[in-house]
Image 1 (spheres, rainbow, N blue to C red):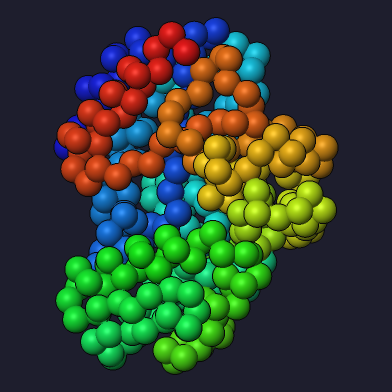
Image 2 (cartoon, rainbow, N blue to C red):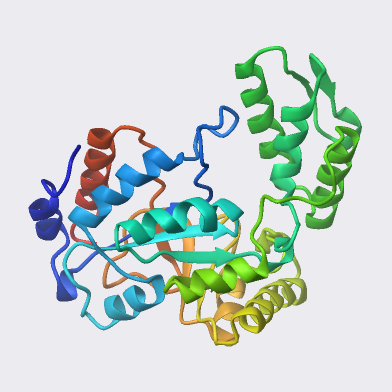
Length: 321
Protein backbone atom coordinates (compact mmCIF):
# COMPACT_ATOMS: atom_id res chain seq x y z
CA UNK A 1 0.00 0.00 0.00
CA UNK A 2 1.35 3.44 -0.95
CA UNK A 3 1.39 5.84 2.00
CA UNK A 4 3.25 9.14 1.89
CA UNK A 5 5.89 8.34 -0.70
CA UNK A 6 4.52 10.92 -3.16
CA UNK A 7 4.17 13.70 -0.59
CA UNK A 8 7.56 15.40 -1.27
CA UNK A 9 6.86 15.41 -5.01
CA UNK A 10 3.36 16.81 -4.54
CA UNK A 11 4.68 19.57 -2.29
CA UNK A 12 7.17 20.52 -5.01
CA UNK A 13 4.53 20.40 -7.75
CA UNK A 14 2.05 22.28 -5.55
CA UNK A 15 3.91 24.59 -3.12
CA UNK A 16 2.23 26.88 -0.64
CA UNK A 17 1.25 30.46 -1.37
CA UNK A 18 1.00 32.16 -4.74
CA UNK A 19 2.23 29.14 -6.73
CA UNK A 20 -0.13 26.77 -4.98
CA UNK A 21 -2.38 24.34 -6.85
CA UNK A 22 -5.74 23.06 -5.67
CA UNK A 23 -6.47 19.43 -6.48
CA UNK A 24 -10.23 18.70 -6.25
CA UNK A 25 -11.34 15.08 -6.36
CA UNK A 26 -14.89 14.41 -7.56
CA UNK A 27 -17.00 11.40 -6.64
CA UNK A 28 -20.68 10.61 -7.01
CA UNK A 29 -21.25 7.31 -5.26
CA UNK A 30 -19.20 5.05 -2.99
CA UNK A 31 -20.97 1.71 -3.09
CA UNK A 32 -20.76 -0.70 -0.18
CA UNK A 33 -19.74 -3.58 -2.46
CA UNK A 34 -18.70 -3.67 -6.09
CA UNK A 35 -21.65 -3.07 -8.41
CA UNK A 36 -21.06 -4.60 -11.84
CA UNK A 37 -23.41 -2.08 -13.48
CA UNK A 38 -21.53 0.86 -11.94
CA UNK A 39 -17.89 0.15 -12.88
CA UNK A 40 -16.83 3.77 -12.50
CA UNK A 41 -18.02 4.02 -8.88
CA UNK A 42 -15.53 2.88 -6.21
CA UNK A 43 -16.60 0.42 -3.56
CA UNK A 44 -15.82 0.85 0.13
CA UNK A 45 -12.51 -1.04 -0.05
CA UNK A 46 -11.28 1.02 -3.00
CA UNK A 47 -12.42 4.30 -1.48
CA UNK A 48 -10.66 3.42 1.77
CA UNK A 49 -7.24 3.03 0.13
CA UNK A 50 -7.88 6.12 -1.98
CA UNK A 51 -8.53 8.17 1.15
CA UNK A 52 -5.53 6.63 2.89
CA UNK A 53 -3.40 7.81 -0.02
CA UNK A 54 -5.01 11.26 -0.02
CA UNK A 55 -4.52 11.62 3.75
CA UNK A 56 -0.84 10.77 3.51
CA UNK A 57 0.01 12.92 0.51
CA UNK A 58 -2.31 15.96 0.53
CA UNK A 59 -3.58 18.63 2.90
CA UNK A 60 -7.34 18.15 2.63
CA UNK A 61 -9.62 21.18 3.10
CA UNK A 62 -13.32 21.98 2.67
CA UNK A 63 -13.99 23.29 -0.84
CA UNK A 64 -15.11 26.78 0.15
CA UNK A 65 -12.17 27.35 2.48
CA UNK A 66 -9.70 26.00 -0.06
CA UNK A 67 -10.92 28.29 -2.86
CA UNK A 68 -10.79 31.29 -0.51
CA UNK A 69 -7.18 30.47 0.43
CA UNK A 70 -6.31 29.99 -3.24
CA UNK A 71 -7.77 33.39 -4.14
CA UNK A 72 -5.70 35.03 -1.41
CA UNK A 73 -2.41 33.25 -2.25
CA UNK A 74 -2.51 31.45 1.12
CA UNK A 75 -3.11 27.88 0.02
CA UNK A 76 -1.00 25.30 1.88
CA UNK A 77 1.29 22.98 -0.06
CA UNK A 78 -0.29 19.94 -1.73
CA UNK A 79 -3.82 21.18 -1.03
CA UNK A 80 -6.79 19.06 -2.03
CA UNK A 81 -10.56 18.72 -1.62
CA UNK A 82 -12.70 15.59 -1.68
CA UNK A 83 -16.09 16.37 -3.22
CA UNK A 84 -19.27 14.42 -3.93
CA UNK A 85 -22.11 15.39 -6.27
CA UNK A 86 -25.86 14.75 -6.12
CA UNK A 87 -26.62 13.50 -2.59
CA UNK A 88 -26.53 9.70 -2.76
CA UNK A 89 -27.32 7.88 0.48
CA UNK A 90 -24.08 5.92 0.32
CA UNK A 91 -22.25 9.24 0.70
CA UNK A 92 -23.59 9.22 4.26
CA UNK A 93 -23.55 5.51 5.08
CA UNK A 94 -20.35 4.43 3.29
CA UNK A 95 -18.18 7.43 2.36
CA UNK A 96 -18.55 9.52 5.52
CA UNK A 97 -17.37 6.82 7.97
CA UNK A 98 -14.30 6.22 5.80
CA UNK A 99 -13.54 9.94 5.68
CA UNK A 100 -13.91 10.11 9.46
CA UNK A 101 -11.64 7.11 9.97
CA UNK A 102 -8.92 8.94 8.05
CA UNK A 103 -9.59 12.29 9.70
CA UNK A 104 -10.69 13.93 6.44
CA UNK A 105 -13.41 16.43 5.64
CA UNK A 106 -15.50 16.08 2.48
CA UNK A 107 -17.68 18.54 0.58
CA UNK A 108 -21.08 17.24 -0.52
CA UNK A 109 -23.01 19.07 -3.25
CA UNK A 110 -26.70 18.25 -2.89
CA UNK A 111 -29.52 18.32 -5.46
CA UNK A 112 -32.33 18.87 -2.99
CA UNK A 113 -35.20 17.70 -5.19
CA UNK A 114 -34.18 14.05 -4.79
CA UNK A 115 -33.83 13.94 -1.00
CA UNK A 116 -36.28 11.89 1.08
CA UNK A 117 -37.13 9.10 -1.33
CA UNK A 118 -36.37 10.56 -4.76
CA UNK A 119 -34.37 9.06 -7.59
CA UNK A 120 -32.42 10.79 -10.35
CA UNK A 121 -33.31 10.23 -14.00
CA UNK A 122 -30.08 8.38 -14.74
CA UNK A 123 -30.79 5.93 -11.93
CA UNK A 124 -34.26 5.34 -13.36
CA UNK A 125 -32.55 4.05 -16.50
CA UNK A 126 -29.86 2.06 -14.69
CA UNK A 127 -32.36 0.36 -12.39
CA UNK A 128 -34.71 -0.37 -15.29
CA UNK A 129 -31.90 -2.17 -17.12
CA UNK A 130 -30.88 -3.96 -13.93
CA UNK A 131 -34.44 -5.22 -13.39
CA UNK A 132 -35.27 -6.09 -17.00
CA UNK A 133 -35.87 -9.81 -17.64
CA UNK A 134 -35.85 -9.20 -21.40
CA UNK A 135 -33.03 -10.04 -23.78
CA UNK A 136 -33.79 -6.85 -25.71
CA UNK A 137 -35.52 -3.63 -24.68
CA UNK A 138 -37.01 -1.33 -27.28
CA UNK A 139 -37.23 2.29 -26.16
CA UNK A 140 -37.55 3.76 -29.65
CA UNK A 141 -40.95 5.26 -28.80
CA UNK A 142 -39.07 7.55 -26.38
CA UNK A 143 -36.54 8.68 -28.97
CA UNK A 144 -33.97 6.14 -27.76
CA UNK A 145 -32.98 2.81 -29.36
CA UNK A 146 -33.21 -0.93 -28.99
CA UNK A 147 -30.67 -2.38 -26.56
CA UNK A 148 -29.34 -5.91 -26.31
CA UNK A 149 -29.23 -7.01 -22.67
CA UNK A 150 -28.21 -10.64 -23.16
CA UNK A 151 -24.71 -10.11 -21.71
CA UNK A 152 -23.28 -8.05 -18.89
CA UNK A 153 -21.24 -6.03 -21.39
CA UNK A 154 -24.42 -5.45 -23.38
CA UNK A 155 -26.11 -4.01 -20.30
CA UNK A 156 -23.16 -1.68 -19.67
CA UNK A 157 -23.24 -0.52 -23.30
CA UNK A 158 -27.01 -0.04 -23.09
CA UNK A 159 -26.69 2.12 -19.96
CA UNK A 160 -23.98 4.28 -21.51
CA UNK A 161 -25.83 4.66 -24.81
CA UNK A 162 -29.23 5.43 -23.27
CA UNK A 163 -27.84 7.88 -20.73
CA UNK A 164 -25.68 9.60 -23.32
CA UNK A 165 -28.63 10.12 -25.66
CA UNK A 166 -31.23 11.04 -23.05
CA UNK A 167 -28.97 13.45 -21.15
CA UNK A 168 -29.54 16.36 -23.53
CA UNK A 169 -33.27 15.93 -23.98
CA UNK A 170 -35.29 18.89 -22.61
CA UNK A 171 -35.13 18.73 -18.82
CA UNK A 172 -38.74 17.88 -17.98
CA UNK A 173 -39.10 15.53 -20.96
CA UNK A 174 -35.98 13.68 -19.88
CA UNK A 175 -37.36 13.18 -16.39
CA UNK A 176 -40.78 12.02 -17.60
CA UNK A 177 -39.29 9.52 -20.06
CA UNK A 178 -36.87 8.07 -17.52
CA UNK A 179 -39.60 7.70 -14.91
CA UNK A 180 -41.95 6.00 -17.39
CA UNK A 181 -39.22 3.55 -18.40
CA UNK A 182 -38.58 2.76 -14.74
CA UNK A 183 -42.30 2.34 -14.09
CA UNK A 184 -42.71 -0.11 -16.99
CA UNK A 185 -39.78 -2.11 -15.61
CA UNK A 186 -41.48 -2.46 -12.24
CA UNK A 187 -39.26 0.00 -10.39
CA UNK A 188 -41.20 1.62 -7.51
CA UNK A 189 -41.53 5.39 -7.45
CA UNK A 190 -39.94 5.78 -4.04
CA UNK A 191 -36.26 5.04 -3.62
CA UNK A 192 -33.60 4.72 -0.94
CA UNK A 193 -30.78 5.75 -3.28
CA UNK A 194 -30.63 9.36 -2.06
CA UNK A 195 -30.11 10.86 1.38
CA UNK A 196 -32.80 12.11 3.71
CA UNK A 197 -32.83 15.63 5.11
CA UNK A 198 -31.83 14.19 8.49
CA UNK A 199 -28.78 12.51 6.95
CA UNK A 200 -27.76 15.80 5.33
CA UNK A 201 -27.94 17.45 8.74
CA UNK A 202 -25.89 14.65 10.28
CA UNK A 203 -23.22 15.08 7.60
CA UNK A 204 -22.91 18.72 8.59
CA UNK A 205 -22.93 17.87 12.30
CA UNK A 206 -20.00 15.52 11.61
CA UNK A 207 -17.98 18.47 10.29
CA UNK A 208 -18.52 17.95 6.57
CA UNK A 209 -19.14 20.87 4.20
CA UNK A 210 -22.44 21.03 2.31
CA UNK A 211 -22.82 22.80 -1.00
CA UNK A 212 -25.70 23.38 -3.41
CA UNK A 213 -26.21 21.56 -6.72
CA UNK A 214 -29.57 23.01 -7.90
CA UNK A 215 -32.98 21.55 -7.08
CA UNK A 216 -33.48 18.96 -9.82
CA UNK A 217 -30.09 18.71 -11.57
CA UNK A 218 -30.88 20.24 -14.98
CA UNK A 219 -28.30 21.12 -17.59
CA UNK A 220 -28.33 24.86 -17.06
CA UNK A 221 -27.48 25.79 -20.63
CA UNK A 222 -30.70 24.07 -21.75
CA UNK A 223 -32.84 26.34 -19.56
CA UNK A 224 -34.00 29.91 -19.95
CA UNK A 225 -32.33 32.47 -17.67
CA UNK A 226 -35.43 32.55 -15.49
CA UNK A 227 -35.56 28.76 -15.20
CA UNK A 228 -31.85 28.52 -14.42
CA UNK A 229 -32.08 31.12 -11.68
CA UNK A 230 -35.12 29.39 -10.18
CA UNK A 231 -33.32 26.03 -10.11
CA UNK A 232 -30.16 27.42 -8.53
CA UNK A 233 -32.03 29.58 -6.03
CA UNK A 234 -34.43 26.81 -5.01
CA UNK A 235 -31.60 24.38 -4.38
CA UNK A 236 -29.78 26.94 -2.26
CA UNK A 237 -32.87 27.94 -0.27
CA UNK A 238 -33.92 24.36 0.41
CA UNK A 239 -30.46 23.31 1.54
CA UNK A 240 -30.16 26.36 3.78
CA UNK A 241 -33.54 25.56 5.32
CA UNK A 242 -32.37 22.02 6.09
CA UNK A 243 -29.06 23.17 7.59
CA UNK A 244 -30.26 26.46 9.06
CA UNK A 245 -27.11 28.17 7.82
CA UNK A 246 -25.90 30.01 4.73
CA UNK A 247 -24.52 27.90 1.87
CA UNK A 248 -21.80 29.53 -0.23
CA UNK A 249 -20.34 26.66 -2.30
CA UNK A 250 -21.92 25.41 -5.52
CA UNK A 251 -21.34 22.74 -8.17
CA UNK A 252 -22.84 23.01 -11.66
CA UNK A 253 -24.90 19.96 -12.74
CA UNK A 254 -23.02 18.00 -15.39
CA UNK A 255 -20.58 20.88 -15.19
CA UNK A 256 -18.73 20.96 -18.51
CA UNK A 257 -18.06 24.69 -18.88
CA UNK A 258 -18.03 24.60 -22.70
CA UNK A 259 -21.32 22.74 -23.03
CA UNK A 260 -23.43 22.66 -19.85
CA UNK A 261 -23.21 26.22 -18.51
CA UNK A 262 -22.32 29.72 -19.57
CA UNK A 263 -21.39 33.12 -18.20
CA UNK A 264 -25.08 33.82 -17.68
CA UNK A 265 -25.19 30.96 -15.17
CA UNK A 266 -22.00 32.10 -13.47
CA UNK A 267 -23.54 35.55 -13.04
CA UNK A 268 -26.62 33.97 -11.44
CA UNK A 269 -24.48 31.94 -9.06
CA UNK A 270 -22.59 35.07 -8.01
CA UNK A 271 -25.76 37.13 -7.63
CA UNK A 272 -27.30 34.50 -5.36
CA UNK A 273 -24.41 34.81 -2.92
CA UNK A 274 -22.18 31.86 -3.72
CA UNK A 275 -18.46 32.45 -3.29
CA UNK A 276 -17.05 29.49 -5.25
CA UNK A 277 -18.30 26.99 -7.81
CA UNK A 278 -17.01 23.69 -9.15
CA UNK A 279 -17.19 22.46 -12.73
CA UNK A 280 -16.43 18.97 -14.02
CA UNK A 281 -13.68 20.32 -16.28
CA UNK A 282 -10.57 18.18 -15.93
CA UNK A 283 -7.63 19.84 -14.23
CA UNK A 284 -6.14 21.51 -11.19
CA UNK A 285 -6.84 25.09 -10.09
CA UNK A 286 -4.12 27.70 -9.75
CA UNK A 287 -3.93 31.30 -8.57
CA UNK A 288 -5.28 32.56 -11.91
CA UNK A 289 -8.27 30.21 -11.94
CA UNK A 290 -11.66 31.90 -11.74
CA UNK A 291 -13.21 30.84 -8.38
CA UNK A 292 -16.45 30.09 -10.24
CA UNK A 293 -14.72 27.71 -12.67
CA UNK A 294 -12.83 25.39 -10.34
CA UNK A 295 -11.89 22.21 -12.25
CA UNK A 296 -12.02 18.76 -10.71
CA UNK A 297 -10.39 15.39 -11.18
CA UNK A 298 -12.21 12.08 -11.51
CA UNK A 299 -10.07 9.28 -10.01
CA UNK A 300 -10.90 6.43 -12.37
CA UNK A 301 -7.81 4.32 -11.68
CA UNK A 302 -8.50 1.27 -9.54
CA UNK A 303 -5.04 0.32 -8.27
CA UNK A 304 -3.05 2.39 -5.74
CA UNK A 305 0.06 2.83 -7.91
CA UNK A 306 -1.87 3.91 -10.99
CA UNK A 307 -4.02 6.21 -8.89
CA UNK A 308 -0.93 7.86 -7.38
CA UNK A 309 0.73 8.20 -10.78
CA UNK A 310 -2.41 9.76 -12.26
CA UNK A 311 -2.44 12.37 -9.49
CA UNK A 312 1.22 13.22 -10.09
CA UNK A 313 0.74 13.50 -13.87
CA UNK A 314 -2.31 15.70 -13.46
CA UNK A 315 -0.47 18.05 -11.13
CA UNK A 316 2.56 18.12 -13.40
CA UNK A 317 0.48 19.13 -16.42
CA UNK A 318 -0.71 22.27 -14.61
CA UNK A 319 2.74 23.71 -13.85
CA UNK A 320 2.98 27.32 -14.93
CA UNK A 321 -0.78 27.84 -15.18
